[in-house]
Image (cartoon, rainbow, N blue to C red; front, side, top):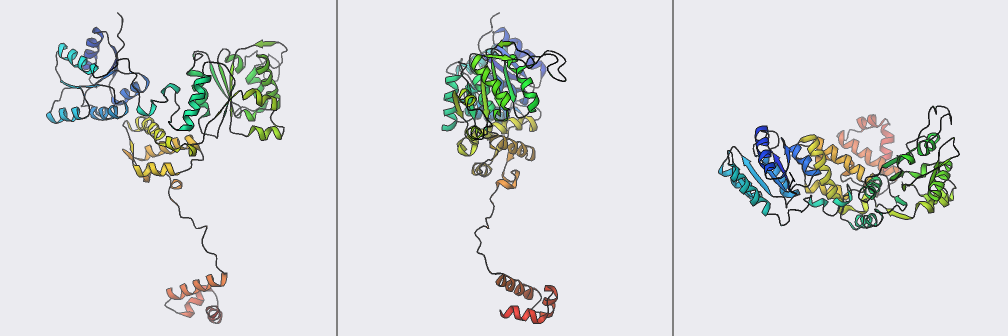
Length: 442
């Protein structure tokens, strides 16, 4: 039986109702997804293009109303149908106000269900429409990259141009800006997405092992080489290898990389035989390679081979318009993971996040939102943010004064505290009364 193109998500904590709805929907050739909780439903919504949501209202932990509100804001074009065994006028009105197309009361007939489904699907102008979160509309095509700023749109334009060819790409950006996300988008959004993608942290592999890991080795090539082994370049054959922190590669490894780029072949450690490979190389760094060239720690000829296409990923401080989109993403991710609910953030807290300069970039923002979600109940506010993000007084411009004036002011303060008792004040200050008197006269 040929399934229809419509995907219908059914959410109910009653297994019997789920199975009943599934039988009916499959008999009408719909593709059915089932969830016994709102948390499970959210996971399906994130990963699948759903054309209709059918949900119960009364469910443990997070109820159907929460799911309806979430879908109404994050998937506004997705039609919603309520099926409930606890009908009330108040619930019915609330559901309709939340954008529910129809409201069925259990038990219902097969024909009533079919009529409600047809009515709900008609509310969509195009049943082929891909339903996505608003914050992902401009970047769903590029995987996990989030943002609508000019800086990010420029990056996406370059990705669009290089994703279907194997030109060498060089990604530059500070730590935590998402360089690997850009590399993955180039690979997985292009026509070579079914081929391997191998990510290598050149700074995370000891220098004496990096060469063997990248190019492979023969048995006996060095101590510990007990068998022949392919390298990561061979593993990535036909696809993409991502060399992160390329600036950490030794000059020996750089020389071998140059040969790979020039000859499209690798030679294993301990071998003289070249092996042909077909690999797209994407390299990235947060180092200044031009400065390294001047210091002769990076090969200039390799630099020009790597930078056929350059992508500069801007730091978060230069794309603050994207912060609210990133915050939404992380609130969604960790809210569901830790709280089984959908969290919000106050305007005041969001303002603090936008004011901060984010030296750790997106990675730092994600960590702070993750912590805030753990610390809050339903709403992230300023109290859940670390103190170093908040406003601090700046005393750097305080007027400097001579020591004798500061000393006199302190003596006067001690006298006030002691009720102008000079003997007691002199005792506290550990000076005699004559010295006390002279300092006051200065």
